[in-house]
Image (cartoon, rainbow, N blue to C red; front, top):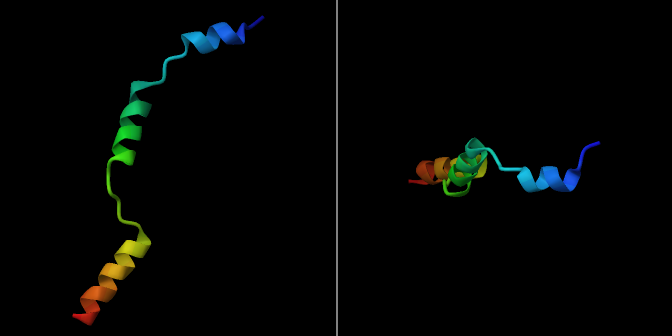
Length: 45
């Protein structure tokens, strides 16, 4: 039978997941709202 406490203690997250999380959290990504506001500002100028 599986000992869940033992398995949880052995668990180590994938380095790819950690790296991806760092990139996503520390990158300022434009969403559609940002893009639309930028386009509107350009049209007004």
